[in-house]
Image (cartoon, rainbow, N blue to C red; front, side):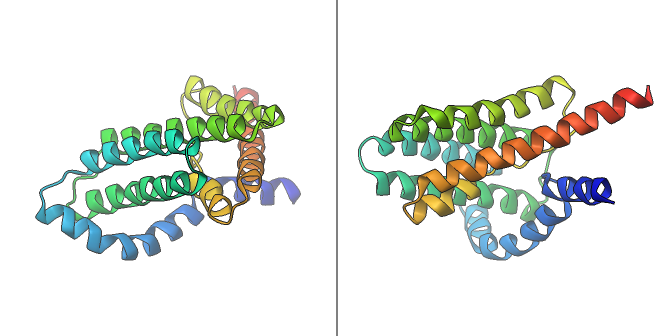
Length: 194
């Protein structure tokens, strides 16, 4: 019973899981007006993704200047991450390339932000969470991407907005451990079926 419940929970946490689909439905209501504005300006979903990536990189630089500027830039970057998907769905231009491009931009930004916050806090213990988080994504790629873990920038942003960056790092570390369990379970199940 526990194994079935855990398996279902881990499936729901993935990028195409039930929880993520539910979130997408409601967040598109928020991003739809911005997607329509991008259509008027003839901005492509990939251009929005690139703008979000640039803002994400800028947020890392801003962390070392002013924490609240970092939070604002990270929020705007994450906001654009929502707009690009809504724009692609609104213009019916969803593509495998766009999904993959957006996913890896998100993952790279997450790992860079995790690294920057760890360095900024001066607490190297968080590097363990970063290692777990990064290894899950790397191992997943090597294994042929059987899982679609959500990069999880929202889990970091909300605590950061409240001035609690350590809580964000903890949540992402916990998520990394959860996904590591899911990936290990998937690979072991696959191995026993062979």
